[in-house]
Length: 131
Image (cartoon, rainbow, N blue to C red):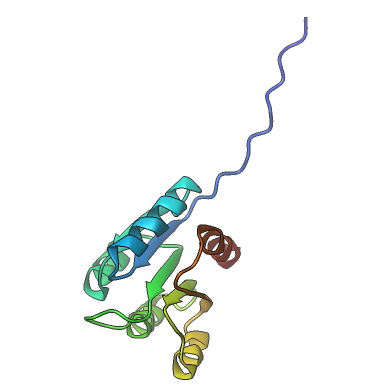
């Protein structure tokens, strides 16, 4: 009698991703999509809390809203870039200006996602940015 063969296991993505956005709905959508895809997601509603999480967690990627009330996403990325210049990031925004694009290029921003974006767009950008 032959032994049963096991089916090949699918590689589950593993990465720690921080989502920083002042809109609760956006954070919730991102976290649901990321955790469903196998990633570990952290959230912050503002740059201050994001800095605390960045200091204590080993992150593999940032997803950051450009326009937030306390500090904009570019400023936060400049802070992160000083310590972790190779940490990939995705910017999410309602619109992207020329100055923002130039700053983003220098800060290892992998992609812009314009609101509203789909879960498929988010996951594709994350997968590509982590590769």
